[in-house]
Length: 252
Image (cartoon, rainbow, N blue to C red):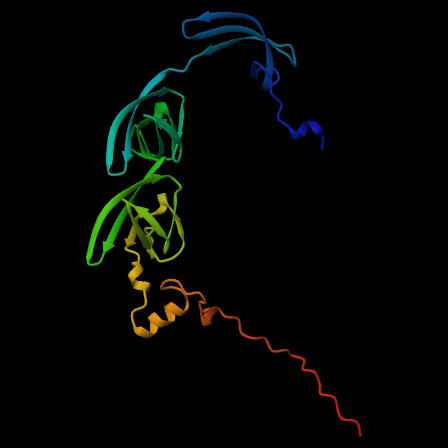
């Protein structure tokens, strides 16, 4: 492989040459400014063909956008170039926020996957940089529904603890639209609802019976104990050698 094939070649004043039938570099021989662009006389560097080139700024066009941020939607008008192309999934910035196109309607009120500005009537987009996650919090017998505003791509793991509205909660389950899951990590934009439960309080783990209290004191969990006892479940068992030494036989 030729080393020149490892990189793209960049040329100045590239334009389509009628003689070469490809995009080539051109030398500008004359240039005249007009109201909405330039009229040029150019010469192809490859074949020497001379021709006129007109460069005009594209016309502007107003398109209606429906921007949805969580439960709130607003209709606004954005000025774009008439030849600008729009695709489902495209991300653009408006009002210092990021939006993703999720629907494009043409002038016949038909849904299309892509189209240029002259063909489009209305574009719908969802806010992308921030995501609203529906939350159900349960404390004892009481439940409440709220909404969490978080960054796009933030992950949540079922079973883990999280801080929410000044309190610590345990993520009991996550609903993705396909069903609830009690385990796994899900990104915020894929979550339909998250269920938060109060974590067990410290009193839940404290010893209650006299026997449990005695054992807790032995292990140093109820105040100072100069010689705490190591819990049996973490005490290593003695390892017995596999090869026992044979006893010497008495001499006859």
